[in-house]
Amino acid sequence: MGAHLLEELIGALIYVLPAYVANGAPVVLVRAIGKARPLDLGRNFLDGRRILGDGKTFEGLGGGLLSGTLTGLVVSLLLPGTFRSALEPLALSSGAMLGDVLGSFAKRRIGIARGGPLPVVDQVGFLAAALLLTWSLFGPKEWSDAVTPLLFLVTALLHLGTNAGAYLLGLKERWY
Ligand code: CTP
Ligand code: MG
Image 1 (tube, protein in one colour):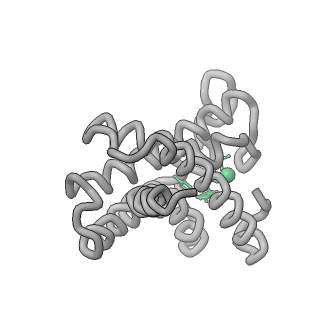
Image 2: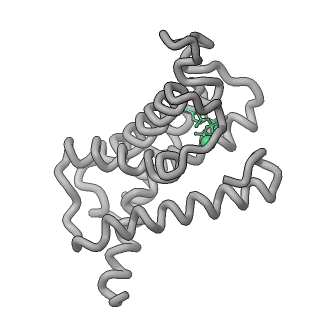
């Protein structure tokens, strides 16, 4: 990989940091507070299965949005010019949480229980939704064609790596 491409990839990783934090914070946060209320209020969908399941909560959603947006604020102070608008980190965080919720909705509809795996969607669904929402509001980020696919690849590997780490630390029940 060329030095320039690596530099662009690092820039892209910093840019999506609000989405990463929004996606990861609920796990730690909900564990810390103990009990959290499910977004679907415990209700079932037309198919008789939970709409979203117990893994999507108000506390997780609020905490994810807040911590992702605050992360964006810190990034903006350290590296001005990373975001085109002060609202961009909020869009990245909202998109990440929306993608996560949509992923759970889809998993429940195809019969995968809360916490069960849906490869690809589990690892990079939040990033796809974060970029789709943010780029439809602020326009796509200008970087080389290779950066976006690389960003997805690195995100998938980081997601698997941090999950395995959380499992080894006893924070998660499953390694994936
Ligand atoms: N979480 C939450 N609220 C959210 C997102 C995540 O409370 N909006 C917390 C839950 O404790 C959840 C954990 O973060 O168990 C990990 O998130 P995730 O892997 O997305 O949920 P799963 O439990 O795997 O459930 P699902 O199968 O629906 O993805
Ligand atoms: Mg999961």
